[in-house]
Image (cartoon, rainbow, N blue to C red):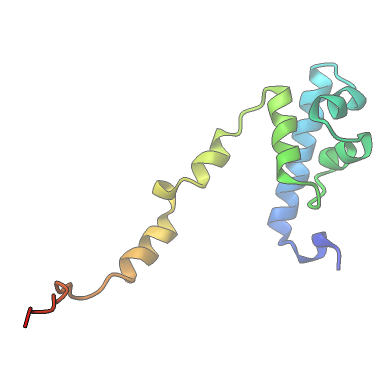
Length: 109
């Protein structure tokens, strides 16, 4: 089963938009796709798949393309920050014990 068949449509659209953004940034900088592929260290076919938003391309390849173009990805870093994980925080609070008791230490005989 192809990867794109199991992806939620929202994820698929985000990848396509990311690829389009990388394509526009490359053309604004007057770089060819062959030049980008060389800078990133991938084949031209793989770079073409980046610009198409293919989900089977490694995330490192997308990030390297953004790095070469000087694009910002700090929002990605912020979204995975444990301090910004509201759901994880709520789950952590829900899993807290009702009572906390000190551990019993064995008494010497």
